[in-house]
Length: 227
Image (cartoon, rainbow, N blue to C red; front, side):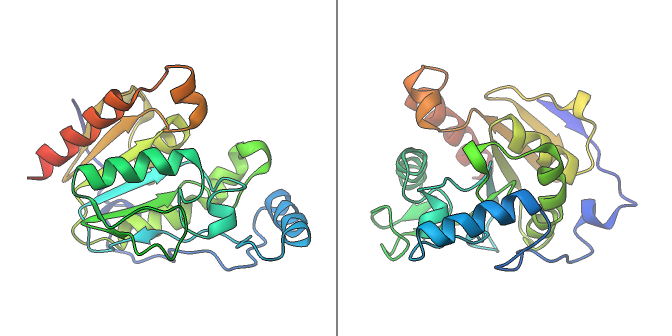
């Protein structure tokens, strides 16, 4: 486990400054994503088709950070990781380790409740081909900084994938070279711990990059550390 100190002079790193945590429904900050969102609204007007807000307990000790909403997943349903394979694996694992209660039925009205946990994304709007541009990740980062700062009891952040890891590292004002992304790695940032996992996408599980057992072991470590 690596240990890194955050920049205490930066309010975003300490959580002193409460920042905006969610973009506007018609957020114009990333023109490419706004155009893609407009096209999706025209094709599927009944879908959510807006920046997907964080889901879960703002007083929780665990924050999970994904990449971005999936086109037919969170972009359709309006809840992170809801409606695609990644959500099937994530929510089943959260229930197994006590970070969620209820029955996940891949829809936002299924009654599922997160326990001591919140889920957000590095980028709040669905990107074409699930690939946000670096400028879009940078533009959306203040909302992640705001989400982190708004969680007074936060002790653990789990980054799903390298992009989520990198933007969390920058949000915490850490040096990237001191906290490299590796599946199963744990990095300490003052009172916080940053945990890394490969993203729970269908591609990663189908190709064997991530197995269910590998994913469960990350959550077992987080659970043990929070006890």
